[in-house]
Image (cartoon, rainbow, N blue to C red; front, top):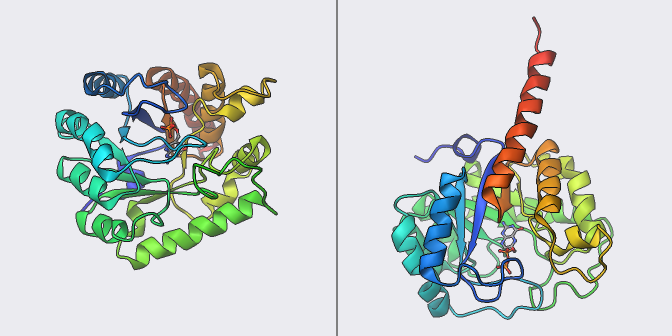
Length: 281
Ligand code: HH2
């Protein structure tokens, strides 16, 4: 029996991003070569990542997606080398890829389609005992940033994730193995992304650990005044991660692990001091 997700990944836990892709928005293909990806994964774990998120398909705005065969070609050598030795998650929507990854030792399936992409994925996660992250995305990567509109982004994202959580539990995945992610930048503009962080308490009312992936996303460049930014800086990413942690996020998905681990350790020390000061004497 796997321990509940919140015990295995206490607040704040850092998830390091290893994109084994030539075309990710955030890192320009630095980990496309398996040897580079393996070295990055090991460095991230040594720097304090609680999880290393390995992905073989970019979901950047405008991207088209790749076949399962191509995704496997990219991620298997990396998983082969590190998934038995480090805590690894697999960033995929494909049951076939998730299955191979878990057989090689991956502990969590990070599905940006929230079990809508592949009908077999829910059943497979249920059987395997893996942890699962369900993420909100409006539309699909190819079209999602074309003027996204919501009535109230926070309640719509929360209602969606509540429905997907119910679906997952009905498919046999224990609730205590599931985390929820509002999907920063997935069919959302700058205002939507910041509103989701500002009112994170609404998503937390579903009583599941929350994952936030704000690292390097374009809203962080745009909020600093660059209207055409396609990425955000490290400093801006850390600001967003600390703000997300302080509003209750559990797992922060980031590209620069050491810097985020250090910043979050300080934010955590402040929260601990707060809790100690509030405790009855
Ligand atoms: N963001 C990206 C990919 N996967 N998974 C979760 N749970 N949350 C996220 O916010 C998230 C995610 C996009 O970032 P990145 O992996 O750096 O880029 P790309 O999709 O272009 O590879």
